[in-house]
Amino acid sequence: MVEQSLWMRKVAANPGHSSWYIERFRSMARAGDDLAGEARLVDTMVPRRARILDAGCGPGRIGGALADAGHEVVGVDVDPALIEAAEQDHPGPLWLVGDLAELDLAARGVDSPFDAVVCAGNVMTFLAPSTRRQVLERLRAHLAPGGRAAIGFGGGRGYEFAEFFADAESAGLEPDLLLSTWDLRPFTEDSDFLVALLRPRE
Ligand SMILES: C[S@@+](CC[C@H](N)C(=O)[O-])C[C@H]1O[C@@H](n2cnc3c(N)ncnc32)[C@H](O)[C@@H]1O
Image (cartoon, rainbow, N blue to C red):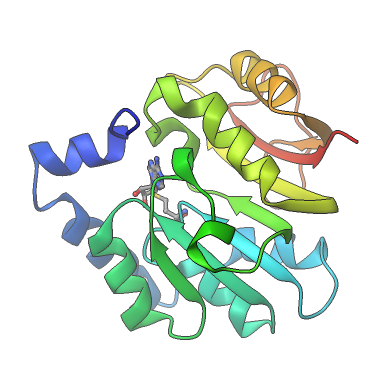
């Protein structure tokens, strides 16, 4: 067993948290908001009909958009209510409940590795801090040689970018390209958001 994620601690403190989050994204979708920016970037990184892991997929907006673009998607999230919503709202991908710190998809009979891993929407800052490095190791273990991970999260949320870079390095993930937005603006020392495109160290 690993330390409980900060997200599930929030859910334990407020059992309505998951349904609030699901409804928030459903109402944005009804309003026609653009919920696929991260998916568009990841789509440019892979060949057609690629295998993509949506790590911390929540109710499935990113994996759903990538499946609509023709990719084979597996989404994993620790919150069962969000996985149920992903199954309802975005049928097609394989949606699985699981903690990323213990991710071993081959052991669950799921083909591994993946051409890309996307971990968006501040997932990194909702992990139990003691599991961050382990999660990065598990993501790396699910990447094919030549594959890449796209990991995005905001500053000021308790996980310093410098600490993340050190954890990624120790997990065997090297920066390929550092951005500050999902629409390709460069990362600088003043950036308050990070989108890191990382490749497994050979
Ligand atoms: C803000 S939501 C983002 C959801 C989705 N990536 C998106 O951008 O729409 C953060 C997600 O991280 C997931 N999460 C947090 N810790 C996790 C863990 N240890 N393993 C798997 N998922 C986790 C939560 O359950 C939640 O769905």
